[in-house]
Image (cartoon, rainbow, N blue to C red; front, side, top):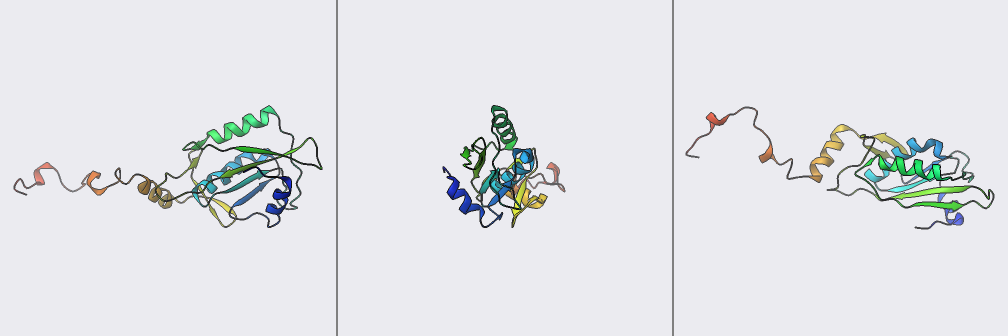
Length: 167
């Protein structure tokens, strides 16, 4: 998904929403990764660094080897691991700057829920929230039905002497 600056301008016109998160710079990388995790646990989405969320101005930022390492490090805290192609889009009005874009696929029933630094997130409209424990546990159960089958659960009220040999 190679975005052009024109496509980017069109995408951000509608402002942030359930599938689009804008961050001014990678100084907000941790918050961006929370949103990325939320995208992975909902319908997917696009995380963009280099666009001011309020004004929707495309300014980009300087991208160094260190910037790329920080992004790779942040992505490594996502579990299960996710393979994301990071795009760097030139900003014509700011020749030394680039917009950083990452697309995250959405979650499907039966998949393990994603966590960032051990915490699951999900999207509610344009807001990123910590996933409630019951939702997280339900998704875990759905992802590994054999592991959570009733036959595998220990019985709290019986022991071996309660068994009827004839049955």
